[in-house]
Image (spheres, rainbow, N blue to C red):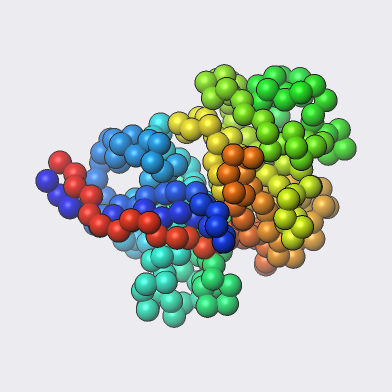
Length: 293
């Protein structure tokens, strides 16, 4: 039986919102196999959205690998925030650095900008966006999401952008419709798998908070759960969508996220030096040890 340092924290918390939970196990260099990592992630199904495995790196300040209960995940924005915010805040050496480098297993090195003293947040560079073809029709999308006919706005396009995960981005006409839809998880998972979609982001420019730029929801049944309550990679794809559609000029904004069954979470976005940055704080919930046979 081996002991590992263990941390569970919620990313993108704001005031009374609950954020998005992730757990992290701190390893020596690659001393857990891929199958062990997957098993640990399966054991966390229903408790956190993703597991992060943190280890030393020769190329950066650390290396991060991400798993859901179903599979290894290319990139996990909320897991990066949930891990890096408390680590930086508790480590004087890291707190002294304006930028910390994290080597991700599948998306290369990302920069973590330390804005804890100024904004009580850290920001992460989103991976460079890649556009993909949208395969399903609007009617098929509405059916998969159990949307009323005509819910998708015709004033903006449906697009697929990968800024960490392949994200199908869907503009909706009505805020009340957007916050109240709850599709069938298994049906939506099949739709995503058949159309090469990692996650689905729906949005309206309307929001409950007048300071929020837009409201989003993100569905991720491919990874073992219906909805992600606060999302880094999805909102990064959304930021690139806003920029290319000339809806946003890149100045700092907040995105409100969540369905009507929760207090909405807040994800910060900004554009700097040709890069989309997403950010927020994290609230630590559990610290301890994790035992692995």
